[in-house]
Image (tube, rainbow, N blue to C red; front, side):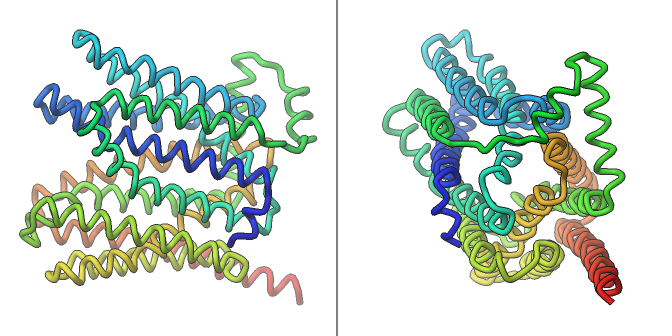
Length: 411
């Protein structure tokens, strides 16, 4: 797993991503609490999340068109520096109470910029990392993300309590600057496909529209991508159903308090860390497609055990064990897209990936909430687990079909 860290360019990207992710979670761990403390309104607090999620649905796919046209390294640097500037602007909220509305505007703007950074980042990775090391590279990226998710909110809470909200905003701003510096030091090999595309495509609105349709058409026409997006949509729908009731489950079913809920989240975080490490460790031995269907089956079955268990200790243990399949299928899905998508189309394909993921996650959340009105909590959670198993079946079917076709071609 650590072979890829000897790659100088990847190491710089990984360190920058770790610092930036940590800064993000520092702010995300503190900002909602700060908003609630200022307003006393759950609705106002929820709006901060809505402002951050909406760009993933409305902008992610469109942003991929621009990412495919722009220089990837420059795009990432400008995005990081722009988000750092937004953090400085957010400081005004702590000084001028009348400008509190800036919280929502900046949360929205930051998420919009992220829609350009993310596809540029995952599109750049195959340019600096060998194909056979991509699974390891993605696993290490997931590991740093899981680590940040565990440590960031805790650090954000400490900074908020000791130094006030401004300290968390400054910390996030500094993390973006550090990330930009790391990216500046990366040496990106030239891409003939990228240069050819930029030289042959005019920069008109019609051209951008055609490019966007071409990206969607690629997903539709390529059998692997088409099936993978179907699997992703069903899995995201399942996650949405589960997420809608996940907060309620410990209190309504297990009769536990907020402390135990926090311990459940910690168990999930620990599981993700372990899972990221294990996926990277065995990346050379297990094809990504097998990790996808195995991960979906594993997550569906372990979550099914959790939601039908009444032992809190068993719930914590299973959540830790669920980390490997839960994070494994996501890592492998990203790797498979990187390998399968044509280089000049990767930005658009990953943009569509983000849009589909966010849209079906939102739909699943709504579906779970609606079903909970007429059904009990556990049956609805079981439905979510069932959808994960359905996604796994689809992935397994395609995997077996491809392996059969490969065997026949070799004969």
